[in-house]
Amino acid sequence: MLPEPYRLHHRADFSRTVRRGQRIGRRDLVVHALVHGYDDLADHDAALAPVPSSGLVRVGGPRFGLIVSKAVGNAVVRHRVARRLRHMCARVADELPEGTDVVIRALPGAATADSEELLRQLRGGLRKLGLLTAPRAGASR
Image (tube, rainbow, N blue to C red; front, side, top):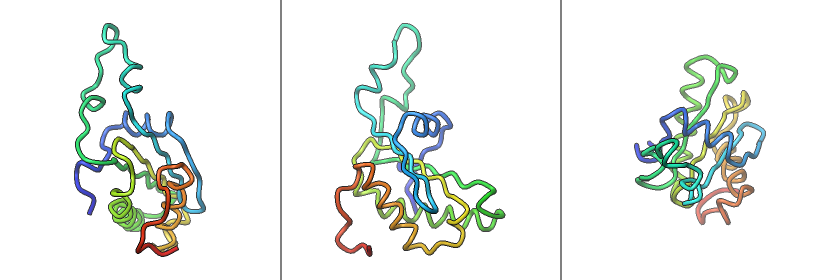
């Protein structure tokens, strides 16, 4: 299970990651990633708009959000895909830099893809985005 500090909850966080972050498409997944730094806080003018508290305080490591639409399947299939993706996020969380937001959009093929294949696609996408440098020692290729 993915611990609470590792989850994206707010729509603004999802939108920011999808719009401002980098994106890489795979066969069954689209991975969006945004690495936060102090530059993000400089974008806000304190006189015009207050800086949201989520931008100031980050607890834990990277945060993950999932998008599993009806195109993937019915509710049972979508929940199964989401559970599998959350499990994969927990496996790669220690390998990502802190301050990273990742949004994973499941494509229809994710419903029938093997879990190891989805993990391989996730790791490959994160590696291509420059967030993972090498596969973890026990991971299958």
